[in-house]
Image (cartoon, rainbow, N blue to C red):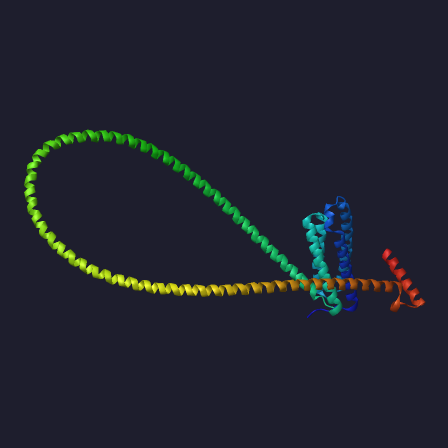
Amino acid sequence: MPVQISGAQLIRVCTVLQDCADQLAVLGNIMPDSYKGRPEADMVVGTDISEVISQNKEAEQSLRTLRHNQGESGCVIDAVQELHKSHKELNRTLETNPLSPDNLTKVQRDRQFLVQVITDVLAELKEKRTFETLLFAVDEEKKKKAHLLDIIIREEEGRRRTKALQRQLLDIRKEKTLELQRLDEMTAHLKDQLQEMKVKTSLERKYVKSSAELLVFQGQKLVTHKEKEVTDEIKLLNDKMEVERRVHMEMEIFLKDNQLRLGEKLEYWMERYEKDMEDKQQEVNLLKHSKATNLSQLQDLARKYRESEQVVMDNRLEKENIRKLQEREQMERGAATKIQSWWRGVMVRRGLGQFKKGKKGKEGKKGKEGKGKTGKKK
């Protein structure tokens, strides 16, 4: 159940938050991007930033006093502590180097975030007297920081893996270099062996030539002896040829019968081939028809996709215009609230309208204010 704040505490919290919003608005006006190109920007921006930092410190002191006075609301204390942390990060960024592009971008982003949170909290405090918006914004900021830390951890792990792969690549390159050197040495060794083989082959060729001449001489002597043996073998072969003729005739008859059977099988397979070709042609025609149907369906889907994409783009433009209009209305409400607060302060300080009192009441009030001032001076 959300905790509601009482009347006096509500006024103090609203006053402190409104002061913070005003200081952040001043900070946004003194830190434009145009200062980056001006040589005198360092001195001017440094003086303005020191003033803003001192004002933020005063606002933090006021928030600490409010936190001590409000002992029963622990959630407000935690939320204010988170707001203090955001202020400290903003101040630390400004004190390092306020004119660097990264710091300027971060300062503007943090300032806009704080202004948005403070504006939402003020609106909620005035309407419902609760601060659920502040708690929700703090939780969302914690989740974003946790997500960023997770991304950084994954990036570091990726860098470590990249370094390990680079080291592995260097090792592989060294191994390949050593292997190339070994192959070059082996190539040189094989070239030497090839040269030796060429010399050895030439010697063997000379030896074979001389041996062949000697064998020819011996062969001529053997030929005369073998001629008689050949005449005897011719007679024997003539007898065998007669046997071979008879065998040849029987083989020819067998082969003709086999040729007839193979011709019949060939006609059967040719008929089956033509039938299969007709079936496959029908399947091809069916596939072409299905391809044309699918192509038309794909064109229809592409047209519907283009129409849907156009609708989405129009919807995005409409949402962007609505968001800009809401931001403008919110800025106008904030400005009206500031003007009303200033006017009420003027009426209270000058005693105008419903805040006007009698002379006796004014004297008593002046006496109390004098005592309060003297107490503060002490």
